[in-house]
Amino acid sequence: MSLRELAVQGRVVGEREVRRAMTKGLLGKIFIASDSDAKTLRGILEAAASSGVEVEKVDSRLKLGRACAIGRPAAVAGLPGKAPEKR
Image (cartoon, rainbow, N blue to C red):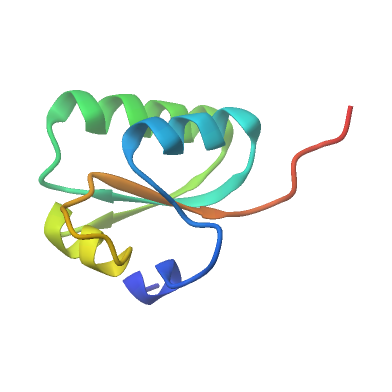
């Protein structure tokens, strides 16, 4: 797909926010910038694999930040997916 998917309400931007949303089971897909540092990439990819979240790589943090309509580069962004399970 394309970065245009990020033009939706409810997207999550930034490593910390994406991790929180994945932990809660709120994300269906994440976008991760290829030029992010290796530690960020590894941690987010492991969390996505364990959560069953789809991953799409993006060329650069700058492109990802622009797609999210923020004024700075972004290492990772997420899209809402399935609703969290009720307890």
